[in-house]
Length: 277
Ligand SMILES: Nc1ncnc2c1ncn2[C@@H]1O[C@H](COP(=O)(O)OP(=O)(O)OP(=O)(O)O)[C@@H](O)[C@H]1O
Ligand SMILES: [Mg+2]
Image 1 (cartoon, rainbow, N blue to C red):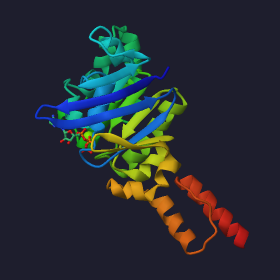
Image 2 (image 1 turned 90 degrees about the vertical axis):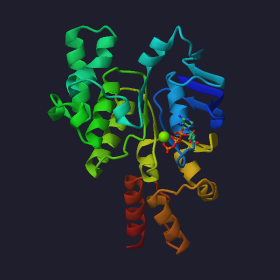
Image 3 (image 1 turned 30 degrees about the vertical axis):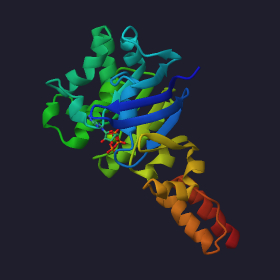
Image 4 (image 1 turned 90 degrees about the horizontal axis):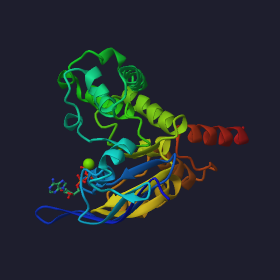
């Protein structure tokens, strides 16, 4: 049984606009999954089905093997936490602290546990200093971090992040990579995220889905999917800069191993350099 699964999920928006077209998506335990696709490909529409914000036009969404229903929706939302693409859709309390505490309080936890979770979540995304601030007056990147902290504080088993790095500064992106990796490695949480930054994908994902016009057009290990240049360009996507550079060097005749992350590239370059020295 999968943690989260969609079967032939189709969603048609009012006005007969196809949002999703027979999407089959599987998320296993302790997985790091990226979803990429051009604007309008259907990423946000798919994510809104993961915790029942949108209901399928046809097909099913299974959480822990159970279809989402009116009856289990509260349980589903405890299990799957979603951070929206637009933080303004998610933040509404008068202070950052209250906002992050809102979810855990609604779970009926005692004050001490709630405080502990808020402390941990704020520290994890590096915004302890914003604790007393009015969320409405924060910068875009700061709001984004508040929204992420709010979901982390719920301690769901699956965290879904819609464009989590959009609007973050370079340090913010680096911090977020650390947060996603820690959630998966230390806490065993399954993380699903969408992004337009393809170079981010190998740093934070093991598995990759590619969407185009409401459908999944490719799926598999990150390195396998990024090897298919034709497919990527046919859906208006690019390969990350590291494999692109290495591919070009290989075309020039340099004997160097393929790499996708910065660490892999460093090891590949050093190996080639030392063998030639
Ligand atoms: N509320 C809506 N009403 C009608 N059509 C919508 C609505 N929201 C999205 N759509 C349409 O559904 C399709 C998928 O949109 P979606 O927002 O899921 O794309 P996305 O992959 O998240 O894009 P982006 O990268 O821009 O965030 C698009 O064609 C979009 O125009
Ligand atoms: Mg979107």
